[in-house]
Image (cartoon, rainbow, N blue to C red; front, side):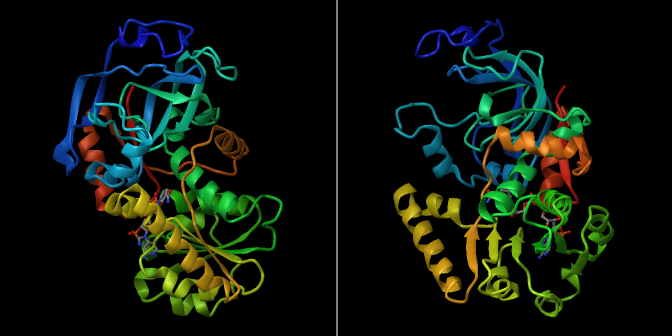
Length: 374
Ligand code: NDP
């Protein structure tokens, strides 16, 4: 069977299994919701490397990226990442979407030390790998973490991708940590969605003062997560009310568009203050121009912008999702300490994946969308 095929360097798995196919939602081409197809015959994941694990998916979480990937966003760059030497004849299809998983380990590669079969785990799946809208998924053990005991699979599946992105932007790119936030003023542009809701809770747990922009009807929601000050972006341009406030040490931008035209003037100059945006042209550039020219364009764009703002005494950065089991371990500790709670806005069953995508496409998220797989 597929799962019993020997790996390139000899056997790597501790067990063999007889399953060759599994139920999954796949796409065979990029497009609208019609591209989504349910099949009982998706290829069963195979352990190809000794550090990999197969996870039985209990719940899958969706992110705006899933809708964009269904449409073809990032296809050139992600295909290159899947097959850097362009040696595989097969395409990325049938492609399984879904970036968040909470489930149970079913099989471990021979080098896997920290997990055993039946461990309950959660993970954010890198976009170049097959996703979680399936009964099983294969991941590297270093992308996986034990799930918080205090959360159900449904709640846990709402966390990894958005919370890891918030962590990566605030900690890796923004230089923040639990030890240096106490006197810091942070502004989150777009606080009511997936990333914003986790960013607010992390920053409040670390003692920062948090200002958030969101729609008026999300004010109570973000205040409930700990936001100290809320500015309604639907009431008019936010530059004015934000400009009247004390300046900020860090801005996390989840909105993009023209925010960087005015937002960096809200930072404290010459204090190491940073603007970190998650809305970047990184994958559009590589899709549009090809990998080599796209990467050159990315380097030139980010360097030009960073320099333009550096001479005014503030730092301009692009933030990215980074898959990491150890970061999820830290997030689990915050969850189990009651510092981060999950915000599941909607739950769909496995047969309702197209409806879940329709909901995601409408936008106006107040937390996360989850699909119950088993
Ligand atoms: P969501 O869709 O979950 O949330 C976006 C939120 O922003 C919604 O609550 C929306 O509510 C609100 N919003 C929309 N427009 C504005 C505005 N002008 N001002 C303030 N709030 C606004 O998205 P995520 O939180 O998951 O992601 C945020 C962004 O970050 C997305 O663009 C995503 O693609 C990007 N991202 C980038 C990553 C990377 O690696 N670079 C990784 C993850 C996310 P409403 O419309 O009702 O106001």
